[in-house]
Length: 356
Image 1 (spheres, one colour):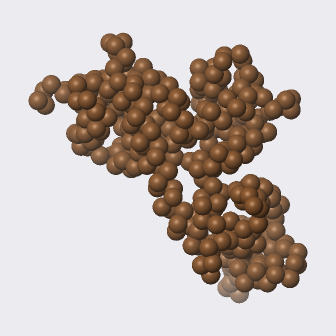
Image 2: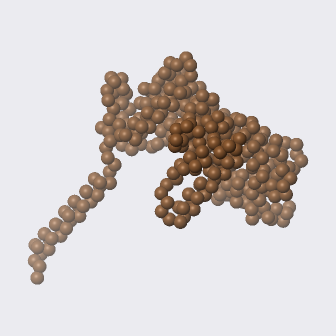
Image 3: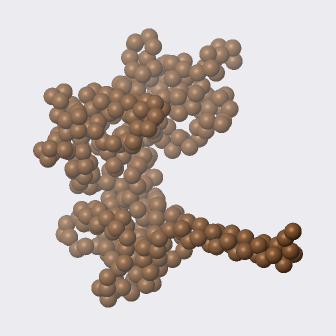
């Protein structure tokens, strides 16, 4: 029979063992301390404000070369894209869509032509432009605390590292004294890329300082011809496998999506490849010679290109043009509402006549 003392001793040993295991789990669960300058984790809101984003509203391609899946909705809805919630009542979303239809239909003939859609796309794109300008004013203030109207690369780097969780005062001191910063490899690579982009946004005469307009080009390359060209060069560099500064179809569809581990992942990858193949052959490769040059890619990505807007308008109409008259009526746009708004209203659209 086990004595009371032995039982208590065993219980105490078990408690100490469990405590030791939990302590080990806590240690291994913590992220590595990549820098002595690193503070506690911070909200990434500040980082999102001052870091160029991969996704730009109203552009057909992301910064990393992926196709923008929301492009059609962004250029059709503009800022109203936030109003179309999948959880909203179909009736409410339908009324919103009918209102937009009436705005696009400028001559009020109850049909949307390619020219009317083109004009609407240009207006919504300009709307995204103005929104970016408005937001940039706030973001510029975040990196220009002394309000002198310009920001140096060092000032931006300090603010950026602070947004990543580094101690701002200590980083500023080290930068001022030209001391080495202990930064992890991933963050350093990001800083190097941002520095290249920063210098590209610095318009002549080069002074290594960005004013508000130049900072807008830094965050939003669509606002600057030079930055748009730089963005295209970056994308071609990432996709170009033979170094000829042009893209073949195989190069354009070879951007890895991820490791295919099951049939569902395979289906996603197959769909992704088919989408890129269609975009390459039908849209980007303007002369259909099987090669996309930097000039062709830049034309494709320029959000204010009126010719592209007209082509886009024709494609958007073709998706829902069931009677093949090259025009969109209200019932057609309601039936294909998911393409234009991201919301399924088809079932409700079938009952349109019942409602009236």
